[in-house]
Length: 395
Ligand SMILES: Cc1cc2nc3c(=O)[nH]c(=O)nc-3n(C[C@H](O)[C@H](O)[C@H](O)COP(=O)(O)OP(=O)(O)OC[C@H]3O[C@@H](n4cnc5c(N)ncnc54)[C@H](O)[C@@H]3O)c2cc1C
Image (cartoon, rainbow, N blue to C red):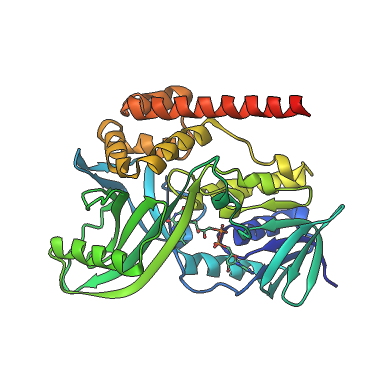
């Protein structure tokens, strides 16, 4: 009774997207799939933004989109078109209801509310332990971060993208709905990388999100005070807060995928699908789930699903810098946006640029910090390499 062909642990963004894709593919038509989550998600617990060309598969649930973005720092301030992209916003409740409306029509999809305690690789199968049951399967697709092993290691720096957002409604029309503020670094940096992120989705409604790329979270009140201060400075005083959101996304090059095993693959943030230098995950999840479905169909080894690329290394250098000199974010991003077209930066962050295009962006960045970070990484690599050789020789 407790055996399924596939068990999806966690029915959030990546788990539901995997279930959606699998249930749309005839290959899985006779396969039993179980989704486990503490709750069946229906509420608006987060807002996902990503950039894409005008038509993409989530268009039906995109609640707002912008053709221009604003970037602000001490170095420069610009509102620019991002064509051919648009910056798009999805409310998670619309995503959950679209996916569940589809999954509920599929006889092969099962859902159970359960607190998952642990998952285990057995000889030739995997098991899931919940508070009161044990489930077995050939393949677990897991989106829960069980351990904080990424925080306990020191090989790769770990920052968090952490934020509090207020959805506000003003009495009078106040906002320009043609442009989303991607990053406004003119807020006090206080030794960190701090910026305001603004999504005006109606002329009197907008999300203001006070965001940091730093090691430690702030007390809740600090984010709140900064949003209120920012609104006052913009002369936005007559407003009501209609919704709030809060989040913290790991920013690290830690190799989450090393935890994948013969019968378990980690997906979503738990699988390392959050872009290390920005925390953006939604679009990556859209792409990775398509790839993973094909990969599973071909019965390829799960530990080899992840392919390391040059962007992982670029992110590592940036995080090396920001973890040591956290105040440099405004300057580095400022330089990046001062000298490069935003659409090219978005292409780069999407990991779609060629080496020549990467260089065009990188050569316009201040070289000294990156060269130092590169040399330290190279020396760390050789120290690690030689200590491994010596430890083997001793044996
Ligand atoms: C507030 C917020 C805003 C974000 N905005 C963006 C954005 O604009 N763009 C972007 O690209 N990314 C964004 N992200 C990052 C990322 O896209 C989301 O975190 C995304 O939901 C990650 O998907 P996931 O499947 O890895 O995790 P989740 O969506 O969090 O899914 C994990 C699921 O596991 C369940 N679960 C956890 N523990 C247990 C347990 N013990 N037993 C059973 N079930 C359990 C949870 O209930 C949850 O449903 C945001 C994140 C947050 C928190």
